[in-house]
Length: 374
Image (cartoon, rainbow, N blue to C red; front, side, top):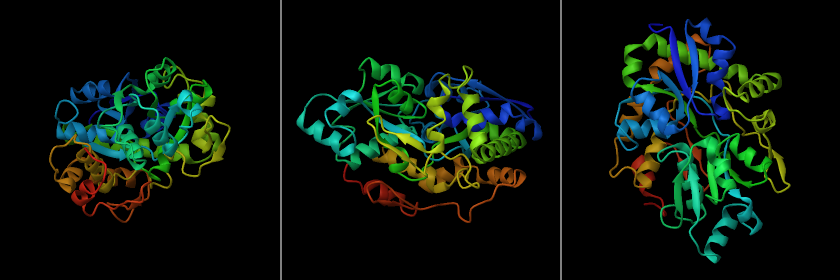
């Protein structure tokens, strides 16, 4: 590595775990780097520090990286996605007040909003980020236009629960453990998990600037390999998952109780209204390497949604942008170094909650094909 010590920004969320554990377990040293995880207050803060070089890398929202690259979420800068950090494991929480009136899921929410007219406020974590896109997609799938029928605000993840407690919003989409925390505090219910919207959806990525990846390719590779190995370690079994939960619950990281973290990482869900279930599609960090490959189709999907909701005025060069940002070359080298299996294709296919299939083949048609759009 050209740079031996690297700062990686993270937001207090369960899915920062692989970055934290690569450092805590000393896996980083094996690859010749020292990872210094630095806790950040908001995604806008992460963006600014990445762009100005205060951070070398970050645990970051997929859609934020793409938004910065295209100049639609703050200062424009060429960016790089080195790997996907996790699949699944976010949720949409509705307030207890709404749930008491029958809004316990998408259909119930649509019914309530139609019968009880007022301004409904929902929060996401960053305008071009993953949570905004899951929230909009979910609302639209139930016939609610997020741009016309609701007010959408941006709130940093660790502040979601406090804001709901004082009545600032009717619902929010955020990563764990903040959905589980809302249930434990008796102020919210889980209306949907994000894996119910899109099974094995991409979520956080290891992001950096294109400039950093170009200047320090060996460092980028070493850090990616170390985090890949930490991801594998987390997914290796119950004992590791519990150790991870105990570690990241600490003040330096997520700063919550272990029981807010350790249930949902095992797929043990409760909705806050007495229903419990085991979800095999819970948050995954590795899954034999299937989680981590930076599929071009994943990156392109966020662009289709940015276009759908008017964040992008015109159709971008979908494949061209994804190829520029997702550094599959560096990833493959890091995967080889960490003995991570590689998929056969750079794209994948999925059916989402509304029955629409996304395969990356015709992004323009896909983006324009939605009934509800900006």
